[in-house]
Image (cartoon, rainbow, N blue to C red; front, side):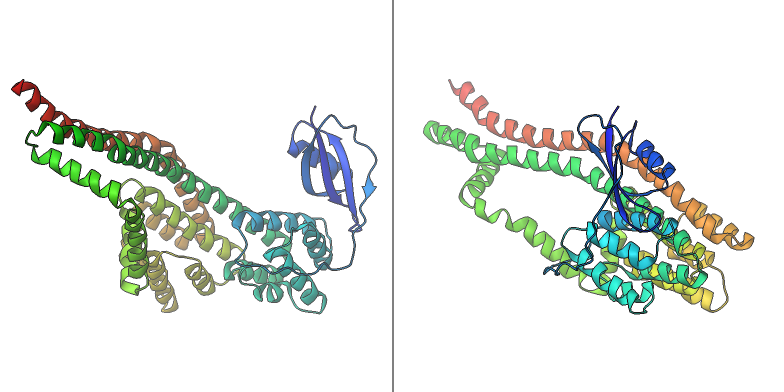
Length: 414
């Protein structure tokens, strides 16, 4: 049976380390909870441990110095932190004690620096949401807004549970979308590499042979040889084409109208459009539903959701919904006018409004779209594979025909 080393805290907030034999991580955590401890980290250890006596950790109260950092905090790390903070709050530990425990576990970086400041500010009398709001690189407005709602309602532990679940689902969705894009990108890079090798080494050999025989070349062969000569002589310019493409996209996206058109294209582009479209709508519904269920007012929830949305098409729809509700109208109509939400979603939102359970309906819609994304990702390889095969086959076929037409003419003259 596997052995697990579990770091936990007792009811007084002291760090404890325990080694237990368990079937899996969940079983190990269950055993620790039965002992009256609250696990914060579980790691499988080599060999079969025997669940030795608990050893109290010696947590140092001395603050480690901050390190210089660049950038923000990854979604995975922030999700893990939120899950651990939720566990400690469920255990009834004071928030400052919980923050210091989690800060001590972090590696030097942006999150560790932020937690030092947050713990200090809360200890000085600030609320958790106020302290976190000073660190937008770690905690965005969505995060801070939910924490603020939890503080106002006295249900911070419940809000942290919801926030951890929301972030976990967002992380899984992000990984699925990225995973769906990796396969075609790798295959395309390999195919381009093979074609570059043919253009650089194979075709010049044929060109030399054709020049020695002096036979007239068909237009298709001349075109192939010219392309090969360009690749061989100016290969250093080739990276400029994708770079120029990226710069063109960035330049277009720097203008509001251009950004809107690009975002609309990504929602409807071939093959990947379905995945990106459904995942974007899923995030919108889950974010809004989670905020409303956490007690955040509907208009503020829409504003926060708007800020967390990178797609301008969806953002415009949210702005229209915000204006509609402010004037006393419904949510469903502006969603329908946006033209990016399907009838099923609009009808479910309409029913949610009528029954007073809009938050639950939005989360249910997000779950449905997540299932659709799962299916789309699983079927993506079966769609992409034949497209790549046909494309690669067409390129190779073109090269073969272009090279063999002069050879056929040469054979006929013999």
